[in-house]
Length: 192
Image 1 (tube, rainbow, N blue to C red):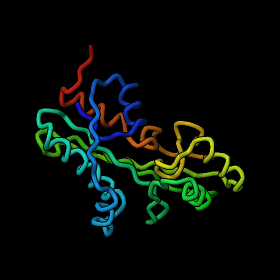
Image 2 (image 1 turned 180 degrees about the horizontal axis):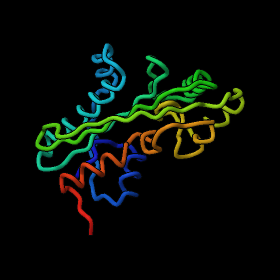
Image 3 (image 1 turned 45 degrees about the vertical axis):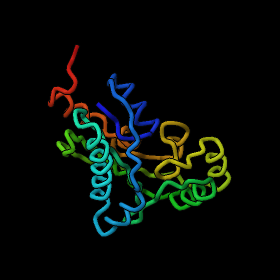
């Protein structure tokens, strides 16, 4: 099993689930693909990106089951990309303050260069109304500059929300239970 991602949190989720796997970065041009699929609905964009990541790695490691995943944070049809610096993280959190948004997490498995399974889940999150001082302090603490939505839910980011509807693993970017179910079904993993 190969995880086609350099994400530390996805690695942690799979480690905690007891999976044996290696990690290979797909080095995919995500921004370019998002632009290419811009006219599609957001869940389709997430699925296309997850499929592309898994396919790219699967074409190199044909005998492995390759897991690709992607996550998109959206308010309505507006996609919030990873901020990549503290100023943009603060701006995104100011925009999300008091609003409800969605985290769309897509996942795919490729084998021998072909998609054999894909899936997506949506979690809905309601952010508290946050004063700028708290937003700035949070960004200094968690430094969420490479996080979808400008928060690390797995760390201090969970305290920014008044309500969530959906699975935590979806919010973290890897819908775990559907993945485990298909891996058991395909006999990629077994009990004992």
